[in-house]
Amino acid sequence: MANMDDIEGLFGTFDAKVDLGSGRVSVSTDLTLLKGKQVMVTIEPLKRYLEVRTLGVFNEFQARVLARADELPIALANAVRINYLGTAALAQVDNSFRLVLPKKTREFLGTKGDVVLVGVGDSLQIWQADRWAEAHAEMERALADNYEAYATEIHRSGRRDAPPVAQGA
Image 1 (cartoon, rainbow, N blue to C red):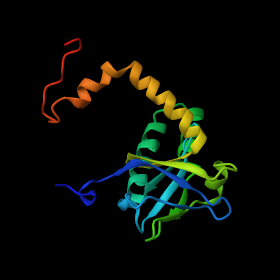
Image 2 (cartoon, rainbow, N blue to C red):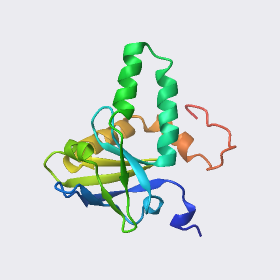
Image 3 (spheres, one colour):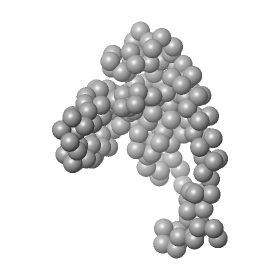
Image 4 (cartoon, one colour):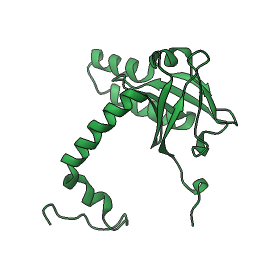
């Protein structure tokens, strides 16, 4: 039987509180990948949530952003660089799973300290609780409306080498 140490990535949804004065938020102990790590905290470009990535993951992310920006017209390339990387700030998750959000990212959360932490594999999203409730309801509607388009492929045998299922089958 696998345990959490065998799983690479950040997964799960957790309610949390941010101390808006200090910026401290307790991260779930289920997110063992973050324990004692330096992380980069960014504001998602559409300003829906904060993103937390370990330094190694952030370096890979940064390389993808810069490579894509190099293919774009100058004004759009600058917007991509600034909106994806310009909000980045270094932070630390201590051995007690506490993260102190940098001031510029903490201010993004506004005046409410209730947040939802969402592990999505390579990053941790930090949503204001009320924004999360609205966005999650919208995501669930979109999933329900498009279930047949993605679910069969995701839920096929679980083998990477299994042939794709034909549409309409």
